[in-house]
Amino acid sequence: MNRTILISIFIAAIAHRATADCTIAYPMQQKKYWPQSSSFVPNAGDHRCDFGGPNNSQYDCQLSGWLITPNNTSIGYFPAVIYVDDAWRNVDRHNACEIINAMVGRGFVVFYADQRGQWDYSGGSYRFHNTGYYTWDWAAMNASTFIPADAIAADYLGDESKDLDYAISMIEGLKVGSSSTPLVDSRHVTIMGREDGAVTAIAAPAHVSHHIAATVDLGGGSRHWGSNWKYWNDTIEADAAADSAPLFVQEVENESPNHTFWAAMAAFDGAFSSDAAGLGKLALYAAFTPPSDEQTVCNNNGWDGQTCGNYWFVNDHDKVARWWPVVYDWIYRVDAN
Image (tube, rainbow, N blue to C red; front, side):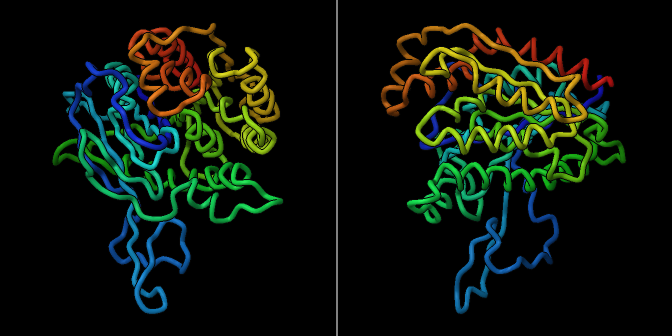
């Protein structure tokens, strides 16, 4: 089963371990994915770089993430996953521990792509800082009475999908040991994202030059709920309509304040104007009650009900066991086409 699964995911606010007893069970290493040339010179104002010094003539440009692989990679040509989480300022790959273990356990290479302006806080300490403007900083800087931050953030997340093209190039260039055997099979690339990350994932097929086998939206519809829902709705629908890859849309009822699924259905409907619509899938799940320890994490962070539901549905061991086989089976089918 050769395919590369690119999973886009963003993370927000302060990092927590998904569950106290979850540990990523596979080899991990930090990988820089942009820029890919030491001679790269950015244009002034590049949103992925930090500028300083006289006339902003000094710059620092770097985007990194974490590569997680199966224990034995000698065979090569693995399916791969690039995962981008919700837009959190401090990012911990352990937040996606349950998903990473599930995917790598099925034979995928996973690249957890930290995004612009994020600090990697994996394992309880700062590991590296990605340069550039953090999503919500950029949105706040450019918001006005007439254009709210939500509208700017939605557009900016789509723009960040272009960065994933470099992440794909990086993983496709990896070799098995000192051999010429590719680690990843370039014919099989899927992009997945959670909440804010889902907006980036859905936008990616229209913004990258590499082949993408599929995209997966984990609760991107939850971004529809709120006073400025229209901006998210319009962005997600338009991006889904432009997709050239099959789209999987998932939502759990907890994500909706009025117990409807229209946000996920809007994204799914948008996808039906694309050429890949016939292979798309919409998965809707009944609400669940977070255990007391999970609810405490939500309360401590001030998360509302839909944020709490979205987070734990994709980070709790039992919940992941509920939906991951469905996503896996779908990817297996569409990736064979």
